[in-house]
Image (cartoon, rainbow, N blue to C red; front, side, top):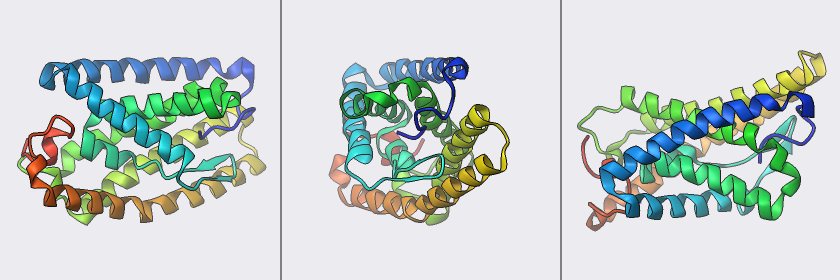
Length: 225
Protein backbone atom coordinates (compact mmCIF):
# COMPACT_ATOMS: atom_id res chain seq x y z
CA UNK A 1 0.00 0.00 0.00
CA UNK A 2 1.00 3.66 -0.10
CA UNK A 3 0.21 5.49 3.10
CA UNK A 4 2.23 4.30 6.08
CA UNK A 5 0.57 3.68 9.48
CA UNK A 6 0.70 6.74 11.69
CA UNK A 7 1.08 9.25 8.87
CA UNK A 8 -2.38 10.57 9.67
CA UNK A 9 -3.51 10.53 13.29
CA UNK A 10 -6.60 8.53 14.25
CA UNK A 11 -8.55 11.69 15.03
CA UNK A 12 -8.01 13.06 11.51
CA UNK A 13 -8.45 9.89 9.49
CA UNK A 14 -12.17 10.54 9.10
CA UNK A 15 -11.45 12.62 6.01
CA UNK A 16 -10.19 9.51 4.21
CA UNK A 17 -13.57 7.86 4.75
CA UNK A 18 -15.25 10.80 3.04
CA UNK A 19 -12.91 10.83 0.04
CA UNK A 20 -13.02 7.03 -0.29
CA UNK A 21 -16.83 7.09 -0.18
CA UNK A 22 -16.88 9.64 -2.97
CA UNK A 23 -14.44 7.69 -5.11
CA UNK A 24 -16.26 4.43 -4.38
CA UNK A 25 -19.64 5.89 -5.27
CA UNK A 26 -18.31 7.08 -8.61
CA UNK A 27 -16.72 3.67 -9.23
CA UNK A 28 -20.08 2.01 -8.59
CA UNK A 29 -21.68 4.37 -11.09
CA UNK A 30 -19.02 3.38 -13.64
CA UNK A 31 -19.69 -0.29 -12.90
CA UNK A 32 -23.41 0.17 -13.50
CA UNK A 33 -22.64 1.88 -16.81
CA UNK A 34 -20.33 -0.97 -17.80
CA UNK A 35 -23.02 -3.54 -17.05
CA UNK A 36 -25.51 -1.68 -19.24
CA UNK A 37 -22.99 -1.43 -22.07
CA UNK A 38 -21.53 -4.95 -22.10
CA UNK A 39 -23.29 -7.05 -19.50
CA UNK A 40 -22.52 -8.26 -16.00
CA UNK A 41 -20.45 -11.22 -17.16
CA UNK A 42 -17.96 -9.06 -19.04
CA UNK A 43 -17.54 -6.72 -16.08
CA UNK A 44 -16.97 -9.60 -13.66
CA UNK A 45 -14.36 -11.28 -15.85
CA UNK A 46 -12.46 -8.06 -16.48
CA UNK A 47 -12.64 -7.08 -12.82
CA UNK A 48 -11.32 -10.46 -11.68
CA UNK A 49 -8.38 -10.08 -14.05
CA UNK A 50 -7.58 -6.54 -12.93
CA UNK A 51 -7.88 -7.51 -9.26
CA UNK A 52 -5.42 -10.37 -9.73
CA UNK A 53 -3.02 -8.10 -11.59
CA UNK A 54 -3.20 -5.34 -8.98
CA UNK A 55 -2.56 -7.86 -6.21
CA UNK A 56 0.49 -9.08 -8.15
CA UNK A 57 1.67 -5.50 -8.67
CA UNK A 58 1.67 -4.96 -4.91
CA UNK A 59 3.06 -8.31 -3.82
CA UNK A 60 5.27 -9.54 -6.66
CA UNK A 61 6.75 -6.50 -8.37
CA UNK A 62 9.56 -4.64 -6.56
CA UNK A 63 8.48 -2.02 -4.04
CA UNK A 64 10.61 0.09 -1.75
CA UNK A 65 9.88 2.50 1.10
CA UNK A 66 10.96 6.03 0.21
CA UNK A 67 10.15 9.08 2.31
CA UNK A 68 6.54 9.13 3.45
CA UNK A 69 5.41 6.01 1.59
CA UNK A 70 6.38 3.16 -0.74
CA UNK A 71 7.18 3.23 -4.45
CA UNK A 72 5.15 0.69 -6.44
CA UNK A 73 4.79 -0.06 -10.14
CA UNK A 74 1.00 -0.06 -10.29
CA UNK A 75 0.43 0.39 -14.05
CA UNK A 76 -2.90 2.16 -13.72
CA UNK A 77 -2.84 3.43 -17.28
CA UNK A 78 -2.17 -0.09 -18.56
CA UNK A 79 -5.20 -1.46 -16.71
CA UNK A 80 -7.35 1.34 -18.10
CA UNK A 81 -6.27 0.84 -21.70
CA UNK A 82 -6.59 -2.95 -21.72
CA UNK A 83 -9.62 -3.59 -19.51
CA UNK A 84 -11.51 -0.30 -19.30
CA UNK A 85 -12.25 2.26 -16.60
CA UNK A 86 -14.73 0.41 -14.39
CA UNK A 87 -12.75 -2.87 -14.23
CA UNK A 88 -9.55 -0.91 -13.56
CA UNK A 89 -11.19 0.96 -10.67
CA UNK A 90 -12.68 -2.23 -9.23
CA UNK A 91 -9.38 -4.08 -9.59
CA UNK A 92 -7.43 -1.33 -7.85
CA UNK A 93 -9.89 -1.21 -4.96
CA UNK A 94 -10.24 -4.98 -4.50
CA UNK A 95 -6.59 -5.82 -5.13
CA UNK A 96 -5.60 -3.27 -2.51
CA UNK A 97 -8.17 -4.65 -0.07
CA UNK A 98 -7.12 -8.29 -0.55
CA UNK A 99 -3.47 -7.35 -0.07
CA UNK A 100 -4.36 -5.58 3.16
CA UNK A 101 -6.54 -8.34 4.56
CA UNK A 102 -4.17 -11.22 3.93
CA UNK A 103 -0.70 -9.67 3.94
CA UNK A 104 -0.80 -6.28 5.66
CA UNK A 105 -3.71 -6.02 8.11
CA UNK A 106 -1.89 -3.22 9.94
CA UNK A 107 -2.47 -1.10 6.81
CA UNK A 108 -6.26 -1.52 6.76
CA UNK A 109 -6.93 1.67 8.76
CA UNK A 110 -5.24 3.53 5.90
CA UNK A 111 -7.41 1.84 3.26
CA UNK A 112 -9.57 4.92 2.70
CA UNK A 113 -6.52 7.07 2.01
CA UNK A 114 -4.90 4.45 -0.17
CA UNK A 115 -7.94 3.71 -2.30
CA UNK A 116 -8.56 7.43 -2.80
CA UNK A 117 -4.93 7.84 -3.84
CA UNK A 118 -5.29 5.12 -6.47
CA UNK A 119 -8.77 5.85 -7.85
CA UNK A 120 -8.93 9.62 -8.18
CA UNK A 121 -5.82 9.77 -10.45
CA UNK A 122 -7.41 7.01 -12.54
CA UNK A 123 -10.49 9.17 -13.06
CA UNK A 124 -8.24 12.11 -14.00
CA UNK A 125 -6.39 9.89 -16.48
CA UNK A 126 -9.70 9.00 -18.10
CA UNK A 127 -10.64 12.65 -18.52
CA UNK A 128 -7.28 13.34 -20.16
CA UNK A 129 -7.67 10.34 -22.48
CA UNK A 130 -10.88 11.83 -23.80
CA UNK A 131 -9.00 15.02 -24.72
CA UNK A 132 -5.78 13.65 -26.26
CA UNK A 133 -7.03 10.51 -28.03
CA UNK A 134 -9.12 11.14 -31.12
CA UNK A 135 -12.53 9.41 -31.14
CA UNK A 136 -11.58 7.36 -34.22
CA UNK A 137 -8.38 6.00 -32.64
CA UNK A 138 -8.36 2.53 -31.03
CA UNK A 139 -5.98 2.19 -28.11
CA UNK A 140 -3.70 -0.21 -29.97
CA UNK A 141 -2.77 2.74 -32.20
CA UNK A 142 -1.61 5.04 -29.40
CA UNK A 143 1.67 6.92 -29.77
CA UNK A 144 4.40 7.08 -27.16
CA UNK A 145 3.57 10.71 -26.38
CA UNK A 146 -0.02 9.76 -25.58
CA UNK A 147 1.00 6.83 -23.40
CA UNK A 148 3.48 9.08 -21.61
CA UNK A 149 0.81 11.71 -20.96
CA UNK A 150 -1.55 9.12 -19.50
CA UNK A 151 1.14 7.58 -17.31
CA UNK A 152 2.37 10.97 -16.13
CA UNK A 153 -1.15 12.01 -15.17
CA UNK A 154 -1.74 8.84 -13.16
CA UNK A 155 1.60 8.74 -11.37
CA UNK A 156 1.63 12.48 -10.70
CA UNK A 157 -1.87 12.17 -9.26
CA UNK A 158 -0.67 9.50 -6.85
CA UNK A 159 2.22 11.71 -5.73
CA UNK A 160 -0.12 14.67 -5.21
CA UNK A 161 -2.51 12.63 -3.07
CA UNK A 162 0.30 11.14 -0.98
CA UNK A 163 1.65 14.64 -0.46
CA UNK A 164 -1.81 15.83 0.57
CA UNK A 165 -2.16 13.08 3.18
CA UNK A 166 1.34 13.72 4.49
CA UNK A 167 0.78 17.47 4.86
CA UNK A 168 -2.67 16.82 6.32
CA UNK A 169 -1.22 14.42 8.85
CA UNK A 170 2.09 16.03 9.83
CA UNK A 171 1.78 19.62 8.76
CA UNK A 172 4.00 21.90 6.69
CA UNK A 173 7.35 21.20 8.32
CA UNK A 174 10.73 21.19 6.59
CA UNK A 175 11.31 17.55 7.52
CA UNK A 176 7.91 16.49 6.21
CA UNK A 177 8.37 18.44 2.98
CA UNK A 178 11.78 16.85 2.42
CA UNK A 179 10.33 13.38 2.97
CA UNK A 180 7.52 14.10 0.51
CA UNK A 181 10.00 15.43 -2.05
CA UNK A 182 12.16 12.31 -1.82
CA UNK A 183 9.09 10.12 -2.31
CA UNK A 184 7.90 12.17 -5.26
CA UNK A 185 11.29 12.13 -6.96
CA UNK A 186 11.56 8.36 -6.61
CA UNK A 187 7.99 7.74 -7.68
CA UNK A 188 8.20 9.77 -10.84
CA UNK A 189 10.86 7.35 -12.06
CA UNK A 190 7.93 5.00 -12.70
CA UNK A 191 7.02 7.33 -15.57
CA UNK A 192 10.12 6.10 -17.40
CA UNK A 193 8.79 2.54 -17.30
CA UNK A 194 5.01 2.64 -17.51
CA UNK A 195 4.64 4.14 -21.03
CA UNK A 196 6.97 1.47 -22.39
CA UNK A 197 4.91 -1.21 -20.68
CA UNK A 198 1.74 0.33 -22.11
CA UNK A 199 3.10 0.30 -25.65
CA UNK A 200 4.47 -3.23 -25.31
CA UNK A 201 1.13 -4.54 -24.06
CA UNK A 202 -0.77 -2.64 -26.76
CA UNK A 203 1.57 -4.00 -29.43
CA UNK A 204 0.95 -7.52 -28.17
CA UNK A 205 -2.79 -6.91 -28.22
CA UNK A 206 -2.58 -5.56 -31.77
CA UNK A 207 -0.73 -8.69 -32.88
CA UNK A 208 -3.47 -10.80 -31.32
CA UNK A 209 -6.15 -9.22 -33.50
CA UNK A 210 -8.20 -12.40 -33.19
CA UNK A 211 -9.17 -11.20 -29.72
CA UNK A 212 -11.11 -8.31 -31.24
CA UNK A 213 -14.61 -8.32 -29.85
CA UNK A 214 -13.67 -10.42 -26.82
CA UNK A 215 -15.60 -9.66 -23.64
CA UNK A 216 -12.32 -9.90 -21.73
CA UNK A 217 -10.91 -6.63 -23.03
CA UNK A 218 -11.96 -3.01 -23.30
CA UNK A 219 -13.94 -2.52 -26.51
CA UNK A 220 -11.97 0.62 -27.38
CA UNK A 221 -8.75 -1.41 -27.35
CA UNK A 222 -9.41 -2.51 -30.93
CA UNK A 223 -12.32 -0.37 -32.06
CA UNK A 224 -12.72 3.36 -32.60
CA UNK A 225 -15.09 5.13 -30.24
